[in-house]
Image (cartoon, rainbow, N blue to C red; front, side, top):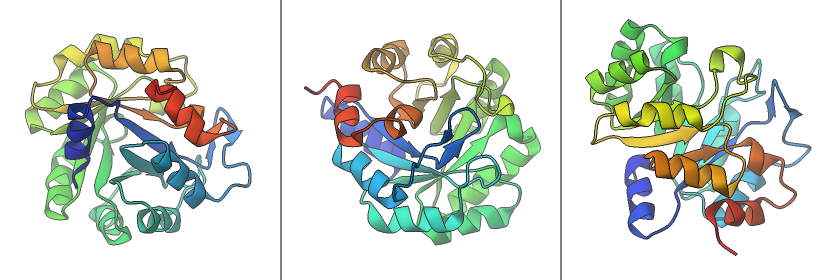
Amino acid sequence: MRLSEAVRQKQAAGEIPIIGDIKLRSPEHGDLARGRDPVDIAMAMVAGGAVAVSVVTEAEHYNGSLSLLEAVCSAVNVPVLRKDFVRREQDIMDTSQAGADAQLLTCCMMSENEIDRFYPVCVEADLEPLIETHSEEEIAHANRLGAGLIGINNRNIQQWEQDNGDVSRTKMLVGLVHKEAVIISESSIMTHDDVLAALKAGAHAVLIGTALLQAEDIIEKMKELRGIK
């Protein structure tokens, strides 16, 4: 199932679509895995109601890998998104071969020409491209592509997400996205109130990593974020 379709179905069922984000460490918070098996983490996210799972495979700052992506893809029955910085077409082929369903394309880390070149490569590889934006100009570019999945990162990835972003970035930009797109609010979402703020602004889903990874019980934290008691 497509990530966008899974989000729409979850919405139609009256539930909050949350994408659980797996990153083994972060520049701001350090070790997030804390000795846990990432596959167990992914399965806990799904058990808690995650509509999809994203996997950060970037190695230098987040300790990710393709083998991590492959392991998660093999273990869960929901769409899987690969988060990394695409530099060449082979990166997209690797994503497909690992079994993922979607590929992140980050506007601020790529030129417009690269986004334009890699977007159809993703489609041809049967991967749904998620265009990640952080500015009006980047959303305008995603709109010109007719992107079906558009992410709004509430933090600045060029600062390795160590800035003080919050859901106000989603509130500021969401109205600029073309009406057919599924919009995902990413980063700086820590509480159920943050989730509701992003959805009220117009996002269709939220992507949450740190809040889940720092929780003692991921399943219970998922329920809390979804507003289930």
